[in-house]
Amino acid sequence: MTKEKLGVNTICTHVGEIEDTQFKGAVSPIFLSTSYEFMNVDVKRYPRYFNTPNQEFLSKKIAALEHTEAAMIFGSGMAAISTVLLAFLNAGDHIVLQKDIYGGTRNLAEAHFEKYNIEYTFTEGLKTEDFEACIQPNTKMIYIETPSNPLLKLVDIFSISALAKSKGIVSAIDNTFATPIVQRPSELGIDIVIHSATKYFSGHSDILAGAVACSQTHMDTIWDLAKNLGGSLSDFTVWMLERSMKTLNIRVKAQQRNAKKMAKYLNSHDAVSKVYYPGLKSHPDHELAKRQMTGYGAMLSFDLKEHVDAELFLQSLKLIKPSMSLAGVESTMLLPAVASHALLTPEERLAQGISDRLIRFSVGIENKKDLVADIEQAIQAAIKQKLVNS
Image 1 (cartoon, rainbow, N blue to C red):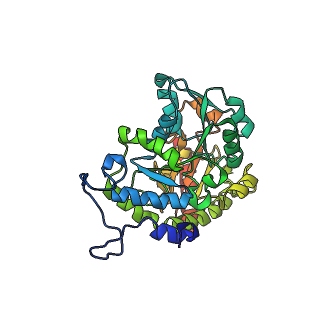
Image 2 (cartoon, one colour):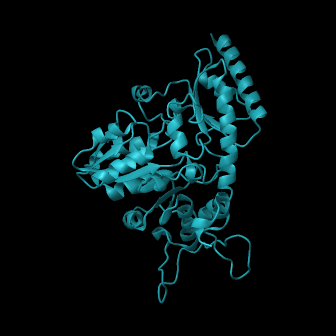
Image 3 (cartoon, rainbow, N blue to C red):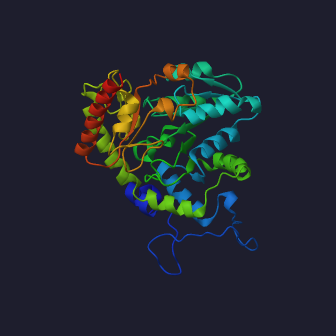
């Protein structure tokens, strides 16, 4: 049976396994060697070349999930992003970047592209015409992230990919929030799909990794630079990631069910002014989400009203963890203004709609009643503490 005909749970569990031919173990063996035979072999393996047995086989799993020809594992999400961008952009080239993207990606462009003589433009909005208006004669790439971090805004993937193809431009997407469980951009025409594998691929808040999936032709271009930048991942961590990805579909589906419940609960709460979740009918991109996603994901964000201090609220949580990252089986919350988007100026954050009271909520697999109870007590505690402080 070909991998294209396998179910998602089967792909997560079995594609990319390494057969233990010696002892017939049920899981892939770990190959920790950093030195391999080079004579009379089909593949000259070297960790920095991204082709050790564990690296190679896990890449097959990711490619199967994203429905692409090839994939590659990196040492972090930013290693994946920076390698892709620098692989396709040369001095004098131009890139169109979505206005609402991960703060690290934005900082990469603003802090480093000038010294490489790479030009860039951030879109004014997220409509296809906003991207088209930014295209210049020297534009070589369009880069999007949907749903976006942290406001869960959506971009029309098919429309953007069609625009890029009509102009002969490479298209790339950060698919971290959606995962291939709820969104496969390659099927909508996107050339390169990028993940912070630290997030849902890992799912247990104990792995730092990145991933790229695309055609073999594009991967050859990426690999040619990647092998020199040296952003590869240790084989033990690769093995841990393969283990974690066996439950990817199960975890994401459970987290997504919880997220929908929590979004509805928060949307009716008198201490919350707005909830950002594509699964809500009130979300401006709800209809687009129904067209290009098979679910709505497990990330949401919400604005607390002025009478609830956001930092005091986070400090009062007892079950939900105030934490820098996301997508683990445990629920976490974050204040983007002081964490994920702290590198942006206050003006840049406000321009993106990121207020000082915005909370990003990565929903885990806990019981809804326990999550609700924790939020309720934290809100009340924050209100009382604010009164005491005043």
